[in-house]
Length: 187
Image 1: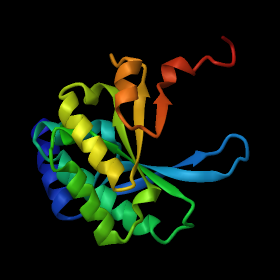
Image 2: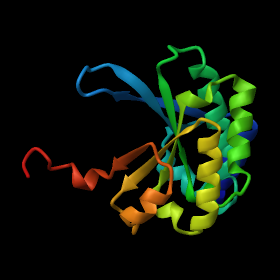
Image 3: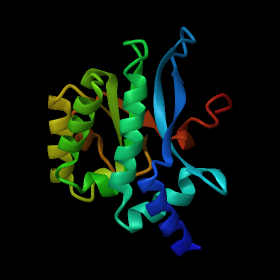
Image 4: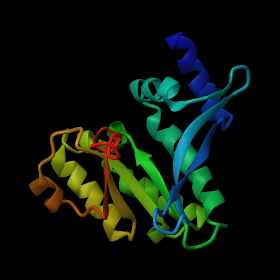
């Protein structure tokens, strides 16, 4: 099955089968949509729509997550550039991508190619991915921030970050992991 998925990923990349799905982000006070989180889906010719839990781990393992992510982000930015200019797009960066010292340049190139404004892009980085190489992460995060891209720390509370680490990184927002808010209405 693993080999089959790997071959499918390679074919899917060559034939642009990885596409963005847009999950709305809503302002809880006004009920207005303020942005969308971009989620990757695989339009498989035989199996139909496949979720990321099936293909992302394999793409990371075989070193294709960067290419797959770029394909999905490029498509999302090309679509989103035509939307209301107040709408932001959030994209997730995998730990493997955060190990790429050229990540900021790749993202800036996608913005340039699609004409999508940097200030409408939010790059989400998981807490756990930061600490594999904190100095490289700091360099990438600072480069993105210097381009006007907004930064979100995703899954906060599931890793080992201290508040002092957070203070040293220029995040615009922190997304608290759902384990902390699932029972907020009862506890």
